[in-house]
Image (cartoon, rainbow, N blue to C red):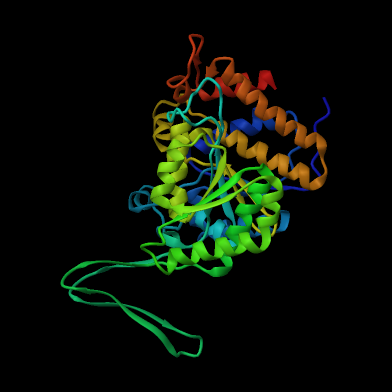
Length: 400
């Protein structure tokens, strides 16, 4: 069989632990036999990030800006325990956060639905896509422990050194903790455009939620700018398409989402989107059944699985040297999403068709009753067979 050729490269970012093992297996079994992979490779494994002072992460992000499409394996964001475990020079920041900051994009996460796994929320009939603003908030915060009594102030000076604002945050009577957050109008406007454009492309309504009744400047700015972009740039297109934009407080949004049937884009601030995407994915079945794509307003795309490195399975795999039953579906869909987008940008119909077939083979394998342990515990039917990751990937290859 003649392999499908690729005109331009995809930026490939390798990762950590169990997902790194799956990454190699997916390439060997499902991609390389059928496609002449053209990738620009970056090793974002924690040890290599440490060896390069995290320069490799920034280089990978800049490469995506050059080639417009990237695919990323799950990576470790180290905490104190990880610094000791890997003997790191420092507690490096989230590589996802670094890449999102450089690309200034919005993360869209949607569940991968199969008929054998019913959502926990019985009213949900269609996927709910989480649009997560991928800049600022707690992920680019400044924080420190307050050691003693004293006054904490929020101060802003302009570029000429003139003091414009000074507000007391809190008069501490003893030790405590302090945190400062920020965001930029430019980034919020980019977020709004990405959300509304995505809603049009997928023909879904867009919901947006914050807590502007409490955060009367920070969250209120999000609300105002989202509405402004919609009114000035998208209202007419949405009306023609029969779509709507809806704003509500985030606590009301949570209640409405639970009662809905799904089928919309739920736009959230950075932290809200981080939390809600896990809630939505778990309620639909599994975090390993969730697609994730970072879309920047200037046309760059980064695909990844929505889950982490599956550390618990990695430790078990190391101890026993036996393959675990770790679900690779989200990682497979990260590759298929990147290949499809590469094909769309290059006019490569064969590559797009392969991405479609890869996804269909994956879902058909699950529908046939062959699946990993996490899905087998949730699946309906008497013919369910729980297999390890290697056997599952081989079954997909047979379908493919």
